[in-house]
Each structure stands twice: as C-alpha cells, then as structure tokens.
Amino acid sequence: MPIAVVWLKRDLRLSDHAPLLEAINSGLPVLLLYCFEPIVVNDKHTSARHLQFIKQSLQDIEHRVPQGALRCSLDNVTETLTDLHQQFGISALYSHQEVGLNSTFERDIEVGQWCEIQGIDWHETPYAAVIRGLSDRQNWDKHWQKVMRAPLVNIDLSVIDWLIDDEAKGSLSRCAASLPNAIGTFQYGGEQSAWQTLTSFFEGRGQSYAYSLSSPLLSQTHCSRLSAYLAWGNISLRQVYQQLLQHWNTKGWRRSLAALSSRLHWHCHFIQKFESESAMEFRPVNRGYIDLPRAEGVAAMLKLEAWKTGKTGIPMVDACMRCLIHTGYINFRMRAMLVSFLTHHLQLDWRLGVQHLAQLFLDFEPGIHYSQFQMQAGVTGINTIRIYNPVKQGIEKDSDGEFVKKWLPELEDIPAPLVHSPWMLSPMEQMMHQVQLGIEYPEPIVDLSQSYKAAQSLLWQWRSRPQVKQEAQRLLLRHVRQG
Image (tube, rainbow, N blue to C red; front, side, top):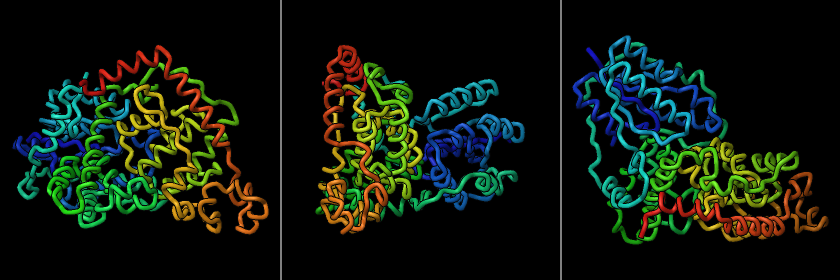
C-alpha cells in the first residue's frame, strides 16, 4: 500500500503541524522522515551545537511515536526518498516551506523535480506568516494577525496509522553516532523542553522581560529563551503568540508582553525580508554598498581572529563572544554590538563574520540572521546607522561588571567601571589589580574613539551616494508597508 511521507526540516515538533495533519487526512500510512543532509551538515553556517540540538529534538519525537515511525538518514533527501519509494511506494510528500540558505533552496528545486518525475504530489505548507514570492508588504500585517490568530492544528497521535519501517528502527542512533558532539553548555532541544521554557516564562521569569532584555546578564533569565526552539521548530510562532494573548490581561505584565509581541512580529518580518531578497546571503541588500571600502591584509585578518576568539582587548566584546562560544546565546543588543564592532570599529566586511556567528548562535535562523546582520552593519541604506561603543554599553548594561567578570575572570579584581576600559589603568594599578595588559589580557586592538569617528564619517558619506539612495527607495517599496 502506498504511503505518505512527512519530511521534517525546521519544524521538529508533533503539534500545530499542518503537513502532519494533511498526511493523516490522506488516509495513507504515515512515515516521518528527517535527513542529516551533507549540504547542511557540512555547510559553513552549521556547527556541532546545531546538530546536537536537532538530535535532541528528534529523540523527543522518537519517544512519542511507535518505534519505526521515524526514519533518519545521512543521505541526500532525494536519495532517501528514492529508497522509500522503491520499498513502499510514496503517494504524497508533505512538508513546510523552508526559508533557508541558497543551498537548501536549490535542494528544494531538486526535490520538486524528483517528485514531478515520480508522479508524487508534494504538498508544502507556508512557514508561519511568510508568503513565498511576495513583492510588496501591502496588507502583510493583517495577514500576520490572521495566521497567528487562526486555530491551532490539533493532532491526536493515538489515532495515526503509522507506517512501521524496520529500517527506521534505530536509524536516529546510527546517524547520531556519525555526527560530532558539541562542547559547551547549551539549551536542550525538543518540543517538551520548548514548552517547559514557555511555561516558566509565564510562571514568573517573563514579568521583568521589558526591563531586562538589554542586559547581557539579566536577559539570560528573563528573556523568553524561545529563540532556539522557534528556529528549529520545536514550537510554532502561533503557539507562542496565542499563549501570550491568553496572559495579556495579567496584572503587571502588559509592558513585557507588548515588548514580546512586537518581537514575535519582527520574527516573521525579517524572515519575509530574506524570502523576498535572498541574494543578501551573498551581497549587501543595498547594492550601493558593494564597493564600500573595507580593511584587508594580514593586520585585518589578525583583528578578525581576535574578534572570533574573544581576544580583542575590549572587555564587553570579548565577554559576549566567549559567552556565545560556551552557551550559544547572547541577547539582541549584544549581538548588534558584536556586528557593529566587526564592521564599524574594525572596518571589516560583514561577510567575514556572518558565518562565524551563525555557527555560534544556537538559534541560527537564516532569514533573521542575514537581515539583522546587514542592518547592524549599516549596508541597507534604509535603517538607522548605529555604531555601538562597547565601553558605553558595558557601563550602561553591565554597570557592576558582573557579566564581564564572569566570562573574563582575568579581570575579576578590577572594579567597575574601569573593568570596561582596563587600558586606562596605570602599570602600578595593573599590578594592584593583578592583571598585566598584553599578558593576562590583551591590549585593545583598536582605539575606539578613532575608529568611531572614521566609521561615522565613512558611513554617512556613503549613505548620501545616488546609487545607495536609489536602492533604498527600491527596498522601501519591497519591504516596508506603504502609507
């Protein structure tokens, strides 16, 4: 008897899953499929922490379905589908649309061609409120509200006619054994973990959300911490939004819930931007910035390596990078500061750092990542140019230096606010505070006051160029609601 295959990608859950419900309603035996595709596993955006999170998410699914109902593979999708088609005969393929990198877009084209040749119907469900092929944003906000407020897709796992595939039994364990292990302390993947995190937010963590989201230390506790679960689809954006609405009138929460609501809206906005202009993976979204002068040569590459490893001699930058390396998470403001430091203070091309941070972010989501990276790098021509001062950010957002000292223990004896600018210490003060710059902690690789002035002059001068202005108008028409 022919079967229905549900191809899992960045939707690793069993609730509010339209493709799964469609497969169930087909009346055919249902098999879940996940492929650790070489194009993804070996991609320069992918790291061991991502693969570990995916494995944990699939283990969560595996524990909730009959043994043999989930097949995992290390092969390309078309190779795996070919094996399944020869073994069982696939009548239909069900999946969510993926707003991914160019490699997965080309993969999807290949899958579509394969399905057409085999006479297999491929049913794709839109991702959240993202509209494929959208050319402008008129009525997009209304569409977002309609999608987010629509009834959840309820699925009763106990009534599903699962296909029990003997080759699928143990397939996840066999795949996992071939994949690298991550080093660090990261959030645990899976739908169950996602709901535990969401529940704890509304039980108390989130009440201080609006007042803590800019702090690199407080945000670790009081931000939603759902970004990784949303990025890998352990929970849907609609599920989170509807939970938010249920708590909307809770006394003392309105400001924090309003702040979270706006960020859930931005989530789809930036992914839609990437969907509509995916070339930003390779070039500035505003083509007027293609020739923007950037630092090159050996000295520039040494600065890049210092930035990547958290050894720039600028405490707030280094603490954020080391935190990311070990935990996979840092709050939005500090992410923006890291990109600003790379592109403005070090004058490096944003493309030199975009894949590195993608590897570090446990919540790497291509659409949000590229849209935000270019916005912070100042190469859109339509967003406010922000050149972050890491010392100022440290004094304002980590006033007692607790976050910096946690990740830079070599500076733990330096009092705040000097801990944010240790180069101000005299040799005698360095001895007193048990740190010697250039030995225990690096000398700063850049003079922040000089680099700020140079970046400010260049960026504002470049923004006034005719091609930048012309491209800015094009981008506004495509990505911003008119009127």
